Length: 482
Image (cartoon, rainbow, N blue to C red; front, side):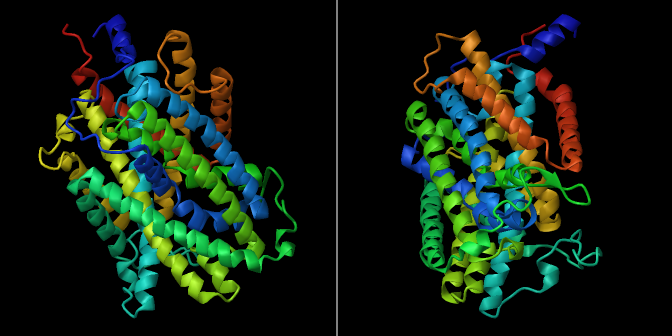
């Protein structure tokens, strides 16, 4: 391939408005379904785990401000997503938008990035879900032995030695349950998601209703024990900004709504509504819950696996703690369901464009879902969830997501200049200014992440480049015959 044609291949773009009506997926999701999908994806690990962990290890009671900063960065990205979803359209979320704004090479990178985000996050949440599920089994006398709740690579935090596990059986199994749910059909999955969202919202209502009467204002002092940005003796970042980088994981998922473009009833209207409503609602919930939690219990005690349930136990309200634990199990289930769904739709879009095997684009005529795609993804994620520890899985998610958000914000800027007359049913207010702020704020949240995370992300991208240059660039449907 000549140098000029090679460069043209990297920069070839799809049409700005992409037809998604003829790919076999069923249009059946309303704005309400999409909002609940967003809430289902967002409220989970963040509110039930990271509120306490970030308060104890990074921000103190000022974790409230960390949530505000992370939510603000997400708000800029959400507005950018909403504009691109309403104007550019196309299946595949930020991948589809990037294909129109930047061309094929950047689109491939962001698609590969999203596969990392959704796939690894699903396995990570399954790993966390398993802990809560086994605790519930222990409560009724049916708890699993330790070697069936930990993978072979799990290490004891106190001794640094292997933990003697064989497989995390609950984490392995829940992926298969979700696989069956998604194969049955997206509308049916949306109904189950709706029911579980209400269960976990009731758990949050119970926590707030009880917790607000057990607040001790002295627990909020000092409010900013680690400052805005500092380091411990080992060089680990501390403070409000570092806390924002940690709790950002709590917002992972709202962008999954944009992967449902091909199945939304009125995508140009419903997708922006779903994205913005779910993000605003969840940000308010995070601020309120983290404020009540750090008021109930000293932040120094909250570095536990279930800080919300722990907080209720700490003030002696055990019945409410049990109900909240039930909400945690339901909450994490919906997170996995939405992330798993988003992963399969990204692969479907990339396969339709010829960048990955056509195997992943196959849609079952009966269920109108990508069954083969769903099964392959499920098998891979089940192995990751069953055999790889939670911390190793979760480290990569934030940097991948933040990178995607940066590119989406840049996409709005590019299209404002290259397609100024493009019909934009939803137009991001102060588009250029807020897009630039989105780029800056998301990039600033990448900086405090550990260097190991940056290295692993680079290695993941390197693998993606090998696949693209070995397969995608030659098989792309935009490739013109030589």
